Length: 416
Image 1 (tube, rainbow, N blue to C red):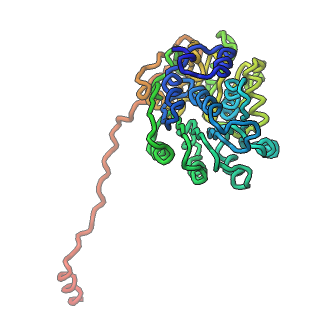
Image 2: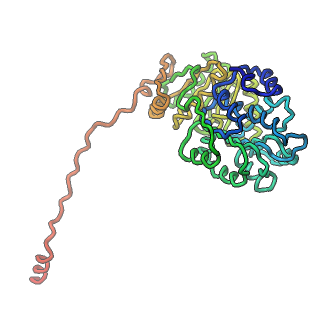
Image 3: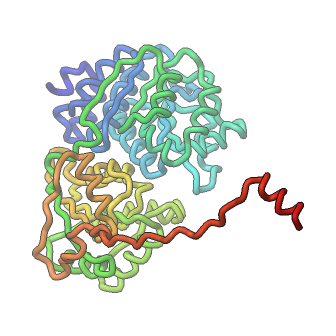
């Protein structure tokens, strides 16, 4: 199947040709016809499956076909809610690329920057507004955003919003939504609270499930390096120097760890930046731009951006720390091996992380091979912690005084 078979309009097809897209991915192939029929959609799809185009392309088409489409339309017609700033910017770039020849207006808002430019852009309304929940609710409360004329609502990465504590904000936004609208709901997993939210938002939806979250990308070669915790930084430096790694995304568990790794690599003359929630929006955008354009060789990130980075030709992902949630491993390595290209995922595992590795094996239903040919291989890390089989000596019970019956005690008292 090609995009022409999906009955998309000529301006959209021309934009797709310019972007080099010829064949839709499975989720695009299934979702686009459903959305064009103006049905609500509940889609379970992991990152890297092409879901941004799965909702952006048909929404653009419907906006063009709607009778309300005219120059100077002063309402928000489409709202896309997504959890992170990076993902919001990425979706905005996608709408810009796919709607290049349509004349549709799109804007993006998120926190961490001044709201002035964002409120100015919203004065005349917009066809598509991409927003993070916090800034969206803030501008709604200030009276800058009204959703009474909304035609399309897209909730993207719903389970990630749950993890980041945004579900309550989403429920507040729901109160302001018009009943007559088309809703598209995307989530990589479907925990009970997310399923409950979907039921409240959707009306008789079509359900699509593509590539379960436990399935790792087929074209990603995975390997584990067993290493002592204190040797991880040395191993990372060794791999960057010895392997042909031109650009890699390194995931760490903490913000402090990301900063520490970035400092260590820069001291070794490897151009690196850290990306996490404590960085200003300007610093985050600059780091991501420099990484995408090749000015940085390494980007060290926390999981806040695990689903918000889309970099062409990213050959390697390195898990400096194994994630505590096994599904997060799938999202991390999904940053490489995209668009039918191959990739390599390297994970460091210390003895303390053996339980995390077992969880990843269980969820992905595969055993990731171990690479032993490196100078920091740790047999101690490879072997699981041994249980303590020594028997503890039994404690002798304390001697208990024999209590006399009350009758005997009273007799003794009378004798005294």
